[in-house]
Image (cartoon, rainbow, N blue to C red; front, top):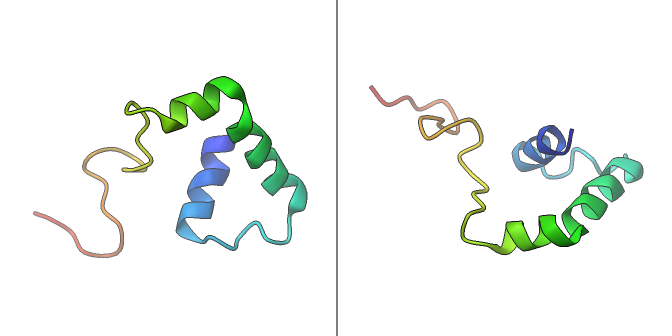
Length: 62
């Protein structure tokens, strides 16, 4: 659930503004000690969202 909500937030940063409980869920999850350490590590990759072939927008590479 976290990953799905986080991806929505990446595509549309204000999409959760009306849903305080969901924003709080993301904040609490990211604040967990082991999760926070992982997200600060070199192993964490915020993008690409789907895989290394994923592209943002409508441009396609052939």
